[in-house]
Length: 150
Image (cartoon, rainbow, N blue to C red; front, side):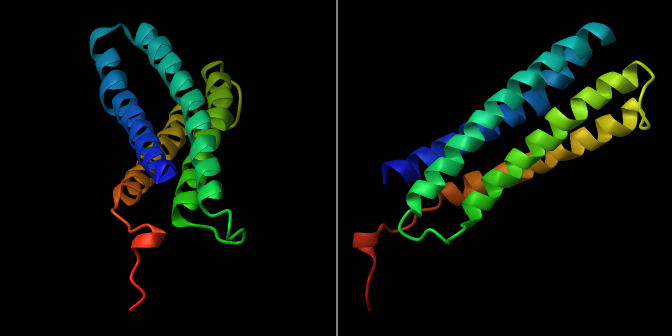
């Protein structure tokens, strides 16, 4: 029961971080700071969010594996949602961010705008995965002793 509650809490915290960074902090920075300063500030925010996402994804994946330890070949929806959000973090930040830096310097085959759009797409999709994960984790499900056999 504790692991299920922890899964719900961590899912909600992760979703909250993504919403705060993407919907509030980043737009606010560009509204009040000069563009270069806002870009540096938001870049730091996304770096912190990516690191937190890695840690939260790994914790949620480990929790899910622990919850299904008696059924080792079972891959749950919650596992897939956390793994998908992890993939979005790795692809959207760790793979594309270095390419965005190169594109700003005039290197690479894709423009900064195209790479930014791809990164934003991964971030938005991660948010959708996390909404689904938090929704599913908050569902009231009976524990094994409470289930009816009739």
